[in-house]
Length: 285
Image (tube, rainbow, N blue to C red; front, top):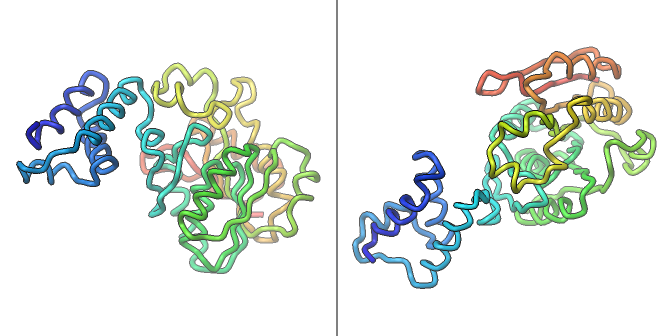
């Protein structure tokens, strides 16, 4: 097999399923993951060929991609705000918008030694990125899922940061959850489930078929379910002058602000993501 033919094989196998730009990205990820080589290495060196073992691994990945399995679950990892994050079907794959939220919080902190709580942490990507970016701060992460917390702990270890972990359900009574924490916080951040069931039909199959539904969807008749509980808890657990940061469904920006304000937050900012959509709320206690 010529060195360039492996690239053609990958691209030809995926061209009916994925758009050209995504195929180029997938090709690079596959070759880096399996061969530890960039595509240009194969194009520039005619003597460079994958081994038989590598070819079998590449064929397996291609088959899984053809079944719409996310490449991040196949490789078991992804990049998030300069961190290497382990992912698996127990946690969501971090999105670029969540990186934007993390960047906003890092800028807000400005290197100060603050106490931070990440609610519904999932893979721990936000908590780990904040602990790495602002090492003088103390970071705690909470999630309802034992499997997700196991992954988040592994990500903290993987990135060499200290994060405390708590297993709890944000929909539980506020006083019960509050009793699990020995301190209050300067910042509370959350990226909770916010996609309504009626939006499911328009979503990509690699999301709906593989990512955990419990971390994605909320009922059509109660789309702000988590935000009310988060705001109620944050009002109880934030220090004076503390800040709540949340990622939201762009369809419900005004309604989410109203729900947050109804729990006692007075100073709110509705912020847009890089696509120009209402995506984040910053609320002061």
